[in-house]
Length: 202
Image (cartoon, rainbow, N blue to C red; front, side):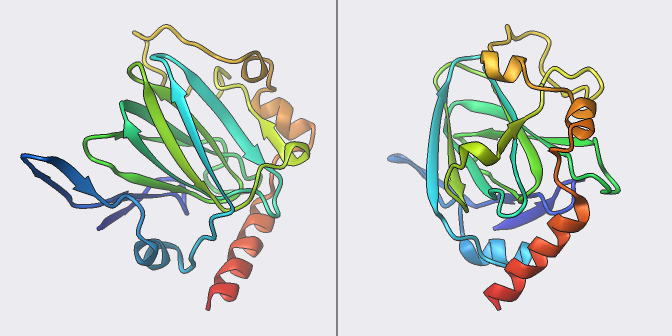
């Protein structure tokens, strides 16, 4: 398993070996020891999510209150997508910056998104599936969103796709509005929570 940290600290791409033969292909997109090696902690799985999206569908940018927020381990078992992470941790050296990784069924790469990071993606083809392993269950009162079309963020949505968004995501505040409303996580709180989780694992 190869491991690559993105430009947003704490976000990791995991690249497993894929074994193909005349039957098809086998890969293991999630391996606990690789996650521990990268982050210093494991991740309990409290909930799994599965989404199916048509080409051009954008979901996010979503995040949750810290603590406990919700760490996510993501992979794409069918189709392909562009996964985008946004550093929304107020006080972070990379606050307001984003990074992106293409995930597809052929390579089965995994992506770990820690607590306090904004997450979004766009489906690059019809019938694209995304699977999420989540460290916490869904908590409606603690869930928030940022408008994925916020021009100040300038997220890398392909220009050749007809965008499909939910009313909730279209009506979400911009990053600046979310910061002014005081709903964004603080970088220092996230760091303290990461350390607490690492200490609990040891």
